[in-house]
Image 1 (cartoon, rainbow, N blue to C red):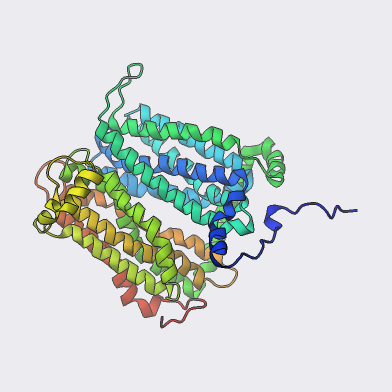
Image 2 (image 1 turned 90 degrees about the horizontal axis):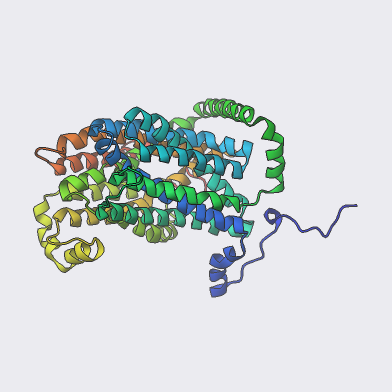
Length: 494
């Protein structure tokens, strides 16, 4: 006879009806306090993994040019057409791999690959070795972490905790981004010189050493994750033929991907949402330039070691505050309309960087300019007008991002045919892929208008970026009647 007193798994527990009023509101936040330890470890892993990734991301183009000797054009192409797209492609395959070998094994595999790859990037300045044994494997290792962390958040949270858990994982990601910005500036401004057994790391290798140290810390954190019964059984079943399981997973993922696009291509909404995501890619390219273009711009225009990390953190702080507020206030409006509004605001923000610097000299000398430069950024002496312009640009851009970015994913889900929500949701990765391909051309723009040596016209570079960002809102408006698809539960006029 079955044991009817057996406690159901957390997934099957029906959450009690929340209390009303202030107690109910507070309860929505405190519901995670009783979560399994694995969920808290997942939050810790998200923070550590994102700090290591973000520090590496900000350092990549500087390291490629100054340590490995690549030109602006070559460094931009390696990042935009190699490193970044490779991560996206491997991320799409990593979900099936996680299902095949389990969460804990995938965690170990990804962190192990990242550790070896970062060690190579720290210790060598031989270009072919650094790229083939460092950058490419690192893209694979980083890609393994993305779906694993999302799957772990879902698996280790109950139904009542799930919504808040995913909100917290997003917040933790942004906190990791902020921490990386401060670490990036601290290491660069410290200008430390030391020797380890005859090895004298450059500033960029020191930044990679920080990422490597964080990666090593992740190992013991993974150890404390307990495997569920189904994952333990899956692990035992596959332990004898791991490589065979991996090969089978790759083949299965490729087959399923081809079948997925085969189904989607035949649908009338597919071509329209594809154009929609291609246009959004121009906004994502502007977001990505903060890691792949802005560090070089800062060093060349604002001075070597400019605190570009702290400047970029303005975006992180604002998104943490604005995203939930804007989302709550604009729920009744269609996702398509909010994406247009947000995209227009983002593009307007970029044009601030193309204005004459003389317009902002008075602001740089004002109380606000002195606080921004001396208190927040820790600068000495006169404040360059571009610090003020960058701060204003990021404030405006962050407002626009809070409007459009979350609604892109909502739009994909809202127009998806019933039963194909996941397939359409997967297409939401396309804007980042398009943005990464576009940012691959930024090296040529940087070399033309903000070269390492010679006359510079940064305002023209930012004008090009502003025009590129404008492609998204203008395209969404101009092709609205052709690409907009009715959203489930929304009035098209709103």
